[in-house]
Length: 410
Image 1: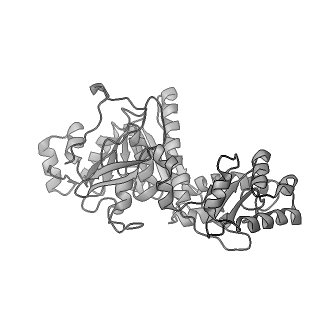
Image 2 (image 1 turned 120 degrees about the vertical axis):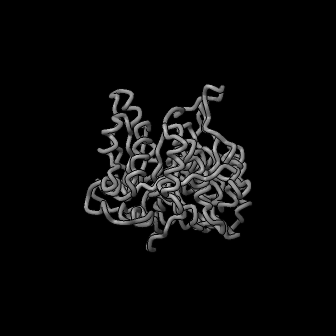
Image 3 (image 1 turned 90 degrees about the horizontal axis):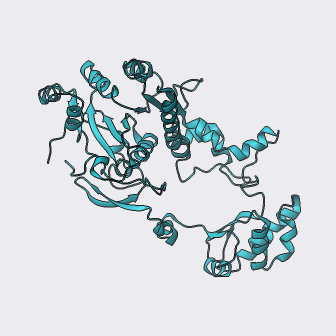
């Protein structure tokens, strides 16, 4: 068993915003894993409930890595693993006992699954009226798609995000990051849980948090929706912030690299025009039609005349919002990223140390921290169940019956 332990504020450790908040995490794969990791980073005691034998499917997935379970290890910190078979009556009773003392339950099953197990919101609420119950699903708890399967590509497709992720006159391109899973799911779940916990301070009771990743993806469409609600259909690659104007555009350089120009404010645009020697374009920043098309063509031709390093040197010290479009490798080596200490080293049981993204939200007085490495399946079953009143004899009996799984201490 890992030597790391649940932080105890009474031992003099820095207190964190969610110290004392206990979360039962029934989610699988990416969206829920990131949400509960964030809660754990800021002090929540996250108890990951997994199926005996198999555990979270992410433990075996190889997406994005040659190493099995890489995504699990990247999102599994600050959690304790308890393996319980929720399909048998005794396993359900064990979970109910945990829920009675929990503050939050987060699950990512399709609507109705937890109800059929007898562990849905209403059943748990009868045991614990202060419980915040977050259901994180693709389409939400109602509507014609609520039972449909899906993944990030489906949610952003339905929300219209994928349709706008295209150049003018070209088809949609799958984004390089999971927008619905993370921005539309993980972050919305954390926001919803924190809002419900704040409301509990007022009402004394918990509530249901219904997070739809499709809803969350649609919420990313605020700027395009302005056009739609005014009666104009957004056009891929031709909106104000997606290629319509020369001042907010991508430009290829002589060496085949790309520069991102985000000169929306007139002062930034004027500086871009001066550095490129195209001062005559300054008055036409937001011109339309052929005049704007000519601005774009002129800048494209000019940027192709010099290499990316030459242009970056030319713009050095100039207030202009011009940056290099970096590869992921370059991003990790960027001095700004390094200065922010965004990468941390974590010990993986049986797999040595590796770097991964650490807590990225900065709080000056109550910062996030990495206190527990990603858990092995059932690593904390004994200690958690013992703390909830089960005797050693009961735990051994449940292990023999296959109701729970507990990893032996190493």
